[in-house]
Image 1 (cartoon, rainbow, N blue to C red):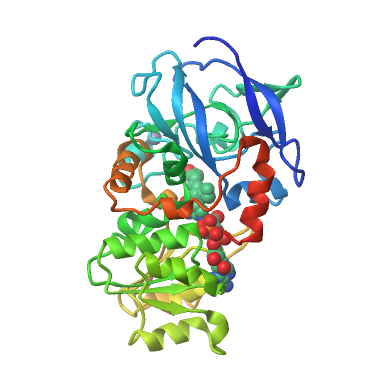
Image 2: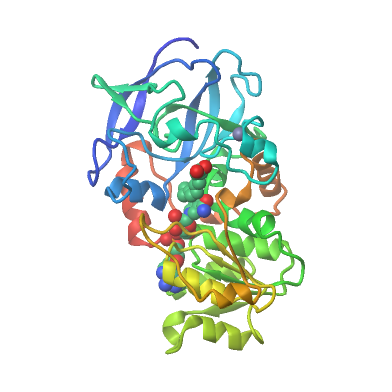
Length: 363
Ligand code: NAD
Ligand code: DAO
Ligand code: ZN
């Protein structure tokens, strides 16, 4: 505590280059900050998107990664909610309980560090990482591709295996929460999920947990249906098997449309299809997928006039500090599947292989 830590991290020196394993210095936590030893991290398409250079807000050099699990190493002045030794999941959406967003009770989009976080900096406008004399940027307030990092975090049950529950730091919670929190679906609802990656499959889990009467899994890669079935999907649709728009297929399958649809791809054409597959009068389409910068969505406004609702969900609407620990308990109580989502394991030194695996097998 109070000292600089030297450790290994995967540094992104610039766009479209492999990550480079480097020795970095991690400075001690300042007021309100915590320093965490990261023991496990997922890799996510969002990390790859930033690394590709398509993310116009990418900052270089940076330490990427935002789906982690770790142990608090030390705390800065004024920190009372965690102590050294606590097991935590880093949060890319914090929860300060004090900003306008937190106080509203209407959203999980805490804004307390929003501005500096978006620019890859800590709240005092500086960074805590130094490598080869360069200040290295933070990423999504997490930078989990480092053995030590500084962030906001949710304190979780120390029994939970960090190499599994790290995935609750993004993808699984996002899909599960979109169904159980953002849409808050009723038992018996009919649901369609577009995209059966980690996020969509977890939306399917959420629908099953809420006793949806029908859960239609949609993907252009039929290899995903095996997983969708295990998690509770009842119907499987590959849009490539039809020569008519997928919304028409779904409306015909469901006597007029679905109660809830979820877009977990990031494709604006599919976002439209998700809205238009909703039942007239009450159907709700939830956008989870993140489209590339600058893209727009469209539909005929009459779709909304006639009662369909379009809304979005970030991190499943889950408030990190107050609600994520309960989702970890759901996993421990076998109400939520996480283990199946760990398809590969790599050492930090092999992180570029993890990106290759994510791309090659379309995970
Ligand atoms: P993924 O790439 O693993 O899964 C996407 C799936 O969609 C794949 O199985 C793919 O075959 C399928 N697909 C692609 N095009 C399709 C089409 N036209 N029709 C049907 N299926 C199609 O991605 P993921 O990790 O599950 O993430 C899904 C999306 O969620 C991404 O856009 C990601 O950025 C976003 N995301 C959002 C949040 C949030 O808070 N809102 C958080 C995490 C991830
Ligand atoms: O408060 O303006 C804000 C942004 C909050 C972050 C929302 C992130 C949702 C998408 C995450 C992509 C996958 C990690
Ligand atoms: Zn807040």
